[in-house]
Amino acid sequence: MTTQETKMDHLSESDLHAYIDGELDADTLLEIEHWLAGHPDDAAKVHAFKLQKVQMHQLYDDGLEAAIPEDVLELLEDKPITSWMPGWRQMAAGIALFIIGGVSGWGFFTMDPMEHEAGGQFARQALNAHVVYAHDTARPVEMSAMYQKDMVSWLSKRLGHKLMIPNIAGAGFNLIGGRQVADQDSPAALLMYENKQGRRVTLFVRSGATFSDNKFRFIAEQGMVAFYWTNGPLSYALSGEMPRGDLLDLANMVFKDISAQTLS
Amino acid sequence: MDKKQAITEELPHLMRYARALKRDATAADDLVQDCVGRALAKLHLFQAGTNMRAWLFTILHNIHRQDLRTASRRIQTSVMDEVVENQHGTAATQGGALIMRDLDQAMGHLPEEQKEVILLIGLEDMSYKEASEVLEIPVGTVMSRLSRGREKLKRLMEGEELAPVLRSVK
Image (cartoon, rainbow over all chains, first blue to last red; front, side, top):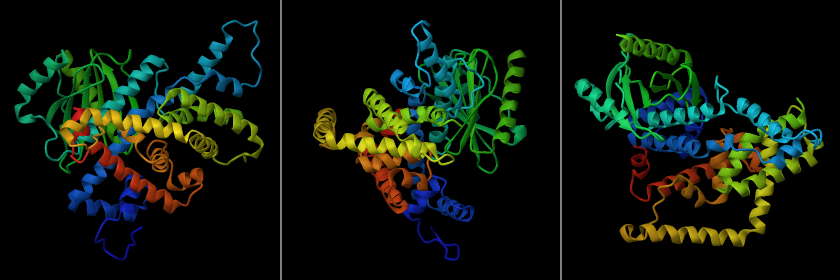
């Protein structure tokens, strides 16, 4: 690791990866963030490797919810299953999966497995869109907020529903624009907001109700956090890199403002 | 906590990791089953209060390595098939360069030792130290494999030119 006394003159491979994997102490972390701010080549590398991690989760996280082979469950059962309880075996397998799903790391409020899976996919899509576009310095949005009216009608057409643009300027975040994005099976839009410090949050909107209620769900991955929910015919995910409580405040603002606009 | 229960709670992680490692659901199921079977047989060796996940992953790895040794010929053949298939699709426009748009395929082209490290750290969120314990190698080796593996993965995904990955997201 880099020593504190000497000023950095290059970023070593090992520091670069240790930075991505959260293996550094606070001082070195700060030093590297400084370095990255002035060295776009290294910053691009960091971005590419972070993206690898996110995409790996996208590709393989289904495995967390894969059915555990019966033989494995049987190995772990304490008592042999008796044949006078038809269907018991299947039920036991179902219950085991259900419990495992609850502790496998996703903070879901719902226990409906279908919603659970769809929700997880939705949240990961949103995080992926965030990591790709929020850090894109060249072209983060397709249409600037300057043309908000056109943007709204264009994206609303894509979504098949009127897109509301929530106002979160009260928290210092201003809309910089939007773009259409690919979602698993339905059209989606991404709105991007930025504050004076250059920090960005994205609101991923897709058509369709992912959940049967409108509670907030939370996901944290690779230093990003997101709250996601359903409100009417659309589902939303607000993603950013900030403490959970701060993002929750923003999510509440978004929810309230959209609800208010819908009513008016 | 009951040891068996502790194993049960690690099953989703074992399943995900085995699938990523084997890239084949049936082979992954078999690997998890062998791993749990062996863990139960050795359960008296597990020290309460130590890291169950790391212990299980170490067992899983030892079995995986044995699998690779006994099946090394078959694996070589299947890698060859994959390369041929890819060249067939891309050779005409790319002058023979293989372009791995698909992360899964790119993972399949990584050396096993680099893939393991990338998955333990990138997917399972293990620390470098945990990964070094699971793989029974020094932390320095974990870091160099990680660095080489990620570079290689990046090159495979970029196929010399940047962006197919980013574009495919849109």
